[in-house]
Length: 112
Length: 218
View 1 (tube, rainbow over the protein chains, first blue to last red):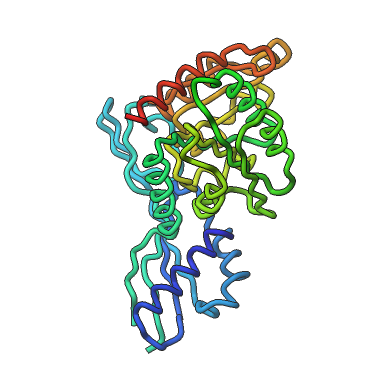
View 2 (view 1 turned 135 degrees about the vertical axis):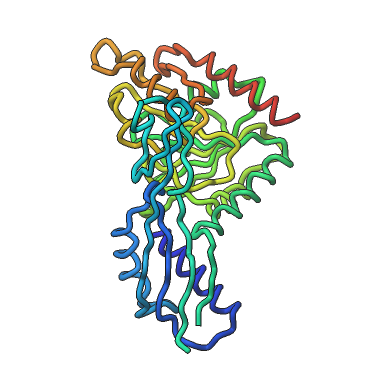
């Protein structure tokens, strides 16, 4: 819920800064698969909290990118959609994880 | 018309957290965020640590709970400057709450500010409060599989303190397993085994904290 609250405050501030009078028709979010944030919980929170906000009635589009796991031991590179503690191929702990942890307000669509 | 924001949703929290961290550093105060499940022994650990920190270092505490003053009263009883935050239902603390609560601490006269977070292994992982160190507490009674089940909080901590080691003879907790799990999730993190009841392991933890505080001061 507090993530949705932060999101709605952010939308309010972005729209005020843009100075555009139109209604908010859609929000585009990026929530990485490893962010620990549950998309269903965000949708639920948004349904509950948005009706009193500038984003009332807006559609919510959420992109959920995977992370990339690179292994220094076997050289493997793999997409992962949950936290791993070792390389999915060889089990080594010598892994680097890139991406997949985003929690972004990507863009706001306003009525013309 | 499209506004491209491309902004972290928790950017406001992160910014405030950075401001908190800088403020504490300016005052020479080491800030520690203490997280762990309800009942894992956070407050009892603080009591044991503070008994050995004096007179070398002066700690202060911000207590975070859904309701009540129970933990703040325990700190007052041992003479530690404390502010209690009641979140009224929120399951974690945020940087804005710390900024407000820190106004009630005389930062010029303390060396450390501990934040005892709301008992929670989940949401606390996502909120930077402005701390310099994050310590996660896991008691032997909770099971050694929590690092697999709740990886984020362990991955984002600087130390794991395994508490209630005096109960090991009565439980199935595999300390080696927990240590190995922490090594994989956070290879740079320290692991301490402590019993606040018997005092076992407390001195080693205190030694590490004293070193960290000295390094932060310089």
